[in-house]
Image (cartoon, rainbow over all chains, first blue to last red; front, top):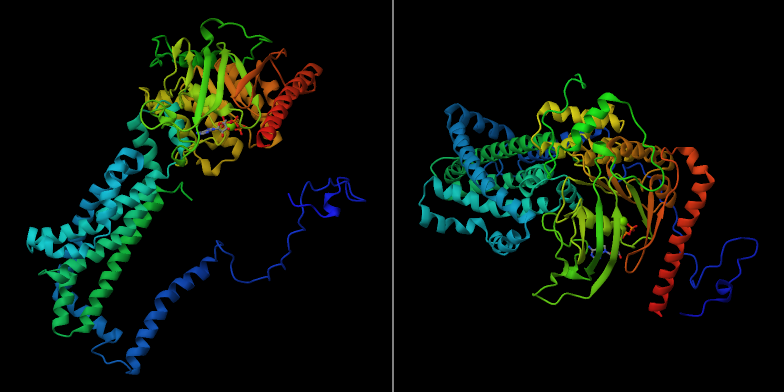
Length: 297
Length: 342
Ligand SMILES: Nc1ncnc2c1ncn2[C@@H]1O[C@H](COP(=O)(O)OP(=O)(O)OP(=O)(O)O)[C@@H](O)[C@H]1O
Ligand SMILES: [Mg+2]
C-alpha cells in the first residue's frame, strides 16, 4: 500500500474530534458538485397532471394534422402526392358508401384474427416451455433465434409456391412473421419469475404442473399480453404486406388498386383506417392487460 | 357461520394415514381460547394427541457448494429436483467443492421451538433449505418423524425473509394457496383461511394485495400461508429481519402464540440473538467455514414469555452468553480469513 500522508496515517484521532483515524486511506475527500439548479420540468419518472397529459395527447395528434393541412393548403405539394384532409375524408366516405371499405376491413381483420390466433396458440406454449424448462430452452432457442432473423416477407414467394395465392399463404405469412418473436418474448417473461415463488410453492405442496398453472402462468400473464400487443402490430403489418402482393380483397389490396389509378386520397384513407384499427386492437389488449395485471405495478 | 357445528369432516389425513392435525386445531379453537404452553426449559415429548409437531433429525449432514458453476450461484437444483449441485458424479469434473455445512447433528423434538443463530454466511439459510428439501445434502441425511426428507413438501412449511407472497393473490388467497391443492370443500377452505387470518390479525386486510400491505403484514400472511397446511415443522428464515423494533416485538409475541396454539415444531433462523433467546426453547449456534454447530444451549425461561422476560436477569445472562459465543466464533473466522489472505 502506498505510504499515506502524515496527517491521514496518524493512528490517533484528529484533534478536537473523537472520530477514529481513517485506516490506510491516502486520498482526500471526494470532489463536491454544485447543487442541481431547481427546474420546473417534471422529474424523471414523475407523473404529470392529468390535464397536462391529455393536452399533450391531443397535441400529439393535432400537430401532424395541422402540418398536413398547412402543407396541402399552401399548394407547395401537388395534390396528387399529398391530398388534402378533406379529399381523404371524401374518399373515405365514398368507400364507406359503396361498401368496399367494410368488406375490405372484414377480410383483413379476419386474416389478422386467424393468423394471430394461430401464432399465439403455437408461441405461447412454446415460449412457456422455453421459459420454464431449460431443456426446452436448449432445444428450441437456437432454431427459433435463427428463424427470427429471416424476414417474413422473404417467405412470400416460397409460400405462394407452397400454398398458392389463396388465404392460406397469407395466413402463413402472418404466422411466420409473429410466431418466433412472440415465442421468445413469452419465454423471457416466463423466465423472469422469482425463484423464491417457485420454491415456496413447492414447500406448500404444489406439484410441477400446479406450479406451472397456478404460479408461473398468473405471474407471466400480464407480460405475455404485453408481448402480444407488440406482436399484434407486427401481424397487422404483415397482413397488409401479404395483401399488397397477392389478393383480391383486403385493405392492402385496396391500396394497390388505388395506386394503379393514382388515387392517393384513397391510399391515405386506407392508411388511416389501418392505423385506427391497429390502435383499437392495442387499446383492447391494454385494457385486458390492465384487468389481468392489476397487481403488477 | 358457526364454527362449532362440525369440524372433523373432510379431515386432512397425513401421509402416514393418521388424521392430520387440522381437525384438532379447529376443535381447539372452537372449544377453548388461546392456551399458552406451560413448558419451560427442555421440551416435553409429544403431549398426547394434541401435539402436531414432527420430530426433525439431522444426522451428519454436510453440504458442499461448487464455486463458479456455470456462473450461476444460488441455483443448485430447481424446486422439483433438489440437490445434484455440481454434477459431482460422472460428467465433467466438478469445480472445487466449498464445504458450507459440515457434519451437522441436530435433533428437534416434536413441538419444540429451536432457534439457529450464527454470523452471516455461516450457512443458516442453507441448513433451513436442506430441511425444507430445496437442497439435498451432499452428506448425511435429514429425517422428519423417521422418514427421509427428499424434497419440498407441505409438512415442512417455509417462511423466508422476503415473505415471497404471490403478488397477484390477495392476502386471503395467498393463505389459501396450499389448501387449494388439497381435496377440501370450498366452505371448509374458507373457514380455515378465515381462522388463520384472524390468528395473524389480518381479517380486515383479507382482500388486499401484497403490494398494499406493510412489511409486517406481509410477513404475517407468509406465516399464515405456511401454517395453512398444518405443517409438522415450520421453518422460518429471518422472518422479522426487515421489521422495525416495535413490529418485531409484536411479531415475536404473535409467533409464540401461534406456536402455542398449533403445537407445531418450529425451527427458526435469525441473526438477532435476543430474538433467538426470547423465542426459542433452545438456541443453536453455528460457526462459519464450514458451517457447524458449536453450541446448543437450552433456554431455561418460563414458557409464557412476555416483554418483562426481556429484562429478566436470567434472560440477560443467557443472551450475553450466546452473543459472546457468536462473537467469539465470528472473530476466529475473521482471523482465519485474514491469515489466509496473507
Ligand atoms: N447456491 C449457492 N452456491 C454457492 N455458494 C452458496 C450458495 N448458497 C450459499 N452459498 C454460500 O454458502 C455460505 C452460507 O450461505 P447461507 O446463505 O446459508 O448463509 P447465512 O448463514 O444464511 O447468512 P445470512 O445471515 O447472511 O443470511 C455462504 O458463504 C454462501 O456464499
Ligand atoms: Mg440467510
